[in-house]
Length: 413
Ligand SMILES: Cc1ncc(COP(=O)(O)O)c(C=O)c1O
Image 1 (cartoon, rainbow, N blue to C red):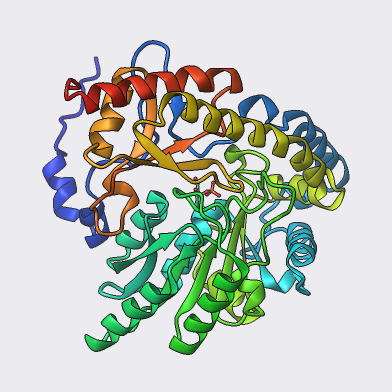
Image 2: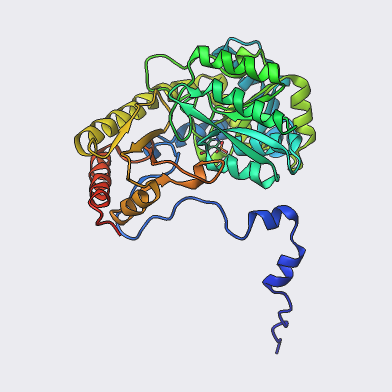
């Protein structure tokens, strides 16, 4: 008879061994909002439309890869990533941005989340300070926080980061003897506000950052998903000629989040430095090589041409529905692409209470302190219209409006 070994380990022992970062992050794991029991309508996550996920394209590309380059696909691929994907990204992103890029300007990463982590690893020490758009993507705010860095939020308007506020944030820090390491921002279809920077705004931000010695970290997760006839203007990184800028992209929103493949684009020296701060043995060649095939064959762009009208239709449906059901409670600016609409609740309606009331009606929505560098929040809700089925949008908005109505009447719990 075997006896169970005595358990001598407990949470207190784990706690006593934790690193500063482990202590800082605490026991809670960051993840997707939990749906309430019963039928739920999710306007919560930045996920692509499920029926259009390109499973067949991926299947074919993976089969081709295994047939034609099995060794390269199944061996380690190095810290910079699969050469075929580095070349493919350089060609496609360079053409989009009017830049001449080579493979040496591209680092393949495990999602854009890893690229952002990699940038933080390279540049941040505890006590450093970073400028971030306020509000912003909670995942990155969490990453920056994990490095023990302070964040100073810069407000946005419909054209993105406000230049006067950027300048005064830098001046304020200088007066305390502090130099911000970088500005983390999204020029296209910002998460969560949906704002897209105008070309003059882009140029002004590049000028300020160059003059003030602040690196630009441009997260372009949604840049391929425009819902207007024209794509957005060139990236900040392109306007800067890659000087003092890193642009971060992903295949999560254009192909599938489950791939976990993204990239960083920068001058060669910076790419080398980023690679030197990687400890994961590189991003999967098994997945990167099929993606390279989809990029070079034009399949990715054809796929995007098919899905953009679907997102545009969902956005139209959302906006029409808001006009019909929610005009009494909120205002909004229709974004020119991406996955999100930022809803400003009328004064007196609290965003966190509204999200809670909506959840009770079976509608999941993003709101609250997680989007804000300082943990405060405004009266805004983030409505993600990308993954909800088009024919459910009306019902979701009706329920949201009912929740807002209850809240306005003071009857919501
Ligand atoms: C703005 C932004 N950046 C980065 C990410 C991370 O994406 P991934 O790591 O899947 O590329 C997300 C995901 O939602 C996002 O919204």
